Length: 355
Image (cartoon, rainbow, N blue to C red; front, side):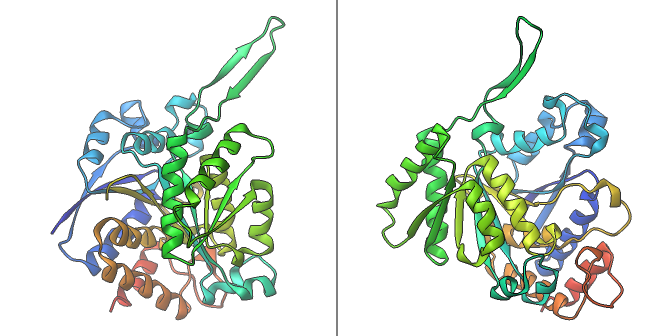
């Protein structure tokens, strides 16, 4: 069977890392994918005046999954919020019904020296997953600005969560924990926020359906501290949109480089959007310096989670590990005396290890 994949290369380093990941996918599963390129993000603003056109959205809707590079950059920072490149991401998530963002974070043993944590903490290793609610909360709530009678401007962003939104992301977290080590940590700010109090109530309400999963609660500020103090304690974390956005970026740095972490955005069906968690890095765009591993890992996630191609996903992930074990590095994870590989050369090295 051939799967149709909508490809949004995006801005900055996006085209380079997408090209590398597609080459790996075609090497491990020749003829299994049809890649259809669409324009979104900053490039779409430049060409069409909007971050996401109806035509691009239609291609994504008709595809089996979406592969995304990165969008945005300082070039478009001065635009109003609804015209920023990032609105393409928000639009795709909402229109495709992708409410759950899955972000694994693990310390690859051979890269432990790149981990910024204390040596004794890094020596324990870690391998956990952050499940982030993706289409609710403050990022999608009412927002705006007001001017009072004295001419003072105030701005507001509203955090709103319904029971149904919390329940569906909670189920994703519990199901994933059941497949891992049966530990789920729900992160909120229930000591202050009413939305978090409802969040905690619904999580605990669902816990009775998963008696085999150990549930714990943690306030978000403590969670941020614990990720640095003892990340090995976590198995699966489930949290809201904004908290998940922040914590997953923090977690990425613990691995040694944000260029290593993939993500999957999923809905009720098998269609998903897969992307590295890093940004468009315009400062290194076009220089063959970007680390493609996060995007290559994202391809592996797509194969496993959307298409039940676990064998091919394992081949890719093991090829990456062997490549790193042989000492190959891009500049962001360079921890030895070897010459760093460029984006293209790292993809070549990984392809050579596919076996």
